[in-house]
Image 1 (cartoon, helix red, strand yellow):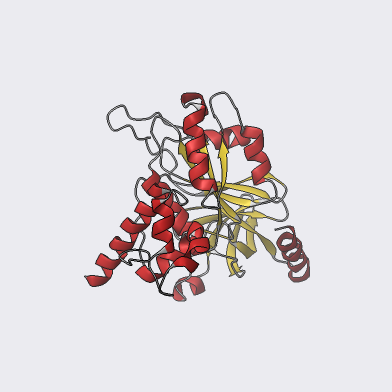
Image 2 (cartoon, helix red, strand yellow; image 1 turned 120 degrees about the vertical axis):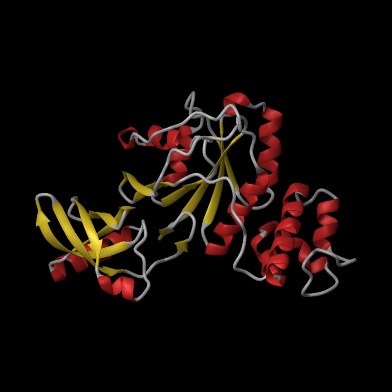
Length: 309
């Protein structure tokens, strides 16, 4: 990230334009944090629309200044993206911090695994973080830790209420651009407020009727926590459909399957109906999380059914 900033600054000095990063986009306006320390309200040039290119939060851009009071500009160039996320819509993300609550509401592991699949497919590293440790016992925490650490993911626990584990979360974010993802009501905005009080993100209580959080974040926005450290809070969502991929490719997005695939009889084994399957055997023996494997089966069937119709 520091190399990108240095490169952008160098290009800015050479061309007289301003370079920076899009930190927010609302109703066709893009707010760019320039390398000169000024936040510009910008419109994107029509050439991007003609090429069907939509600027994204996290994009590194070059803009031409239109005015300084207030600071305004036109986005003239979008630099090459390291990666792109569809939901949340963002670019150049180093990692995703996928946040769920241990209780109130209970973690929806089906949704959690869908988010992990989407990040794996986008080539984005994921860290799983569970909030509300004050509402759960040690045994419950260890069960979730075992499930996701054995799948190859780093797992963090914290409490936005009593600030337990916040220092460890902050250390995990340092030097990276991180997207927060997860359902509403699990504490994403509360975590952002703890890490950066000036963000003043709106938070909402959990609905007593449906036990889900009220939707409080309405757009994606990047916050600069420190030099080269950005955090993006995103709108919460309660469902994600794994699509736009072949069912046979899904197995590559479950990292814990890899060590057991050599025990499958067929090279193209999809770990579903095959009689001799190393992954199925590992799940049956507890060496792969049963819940993760069952979600894999469900996602595979969804993809299969969608392709059929």
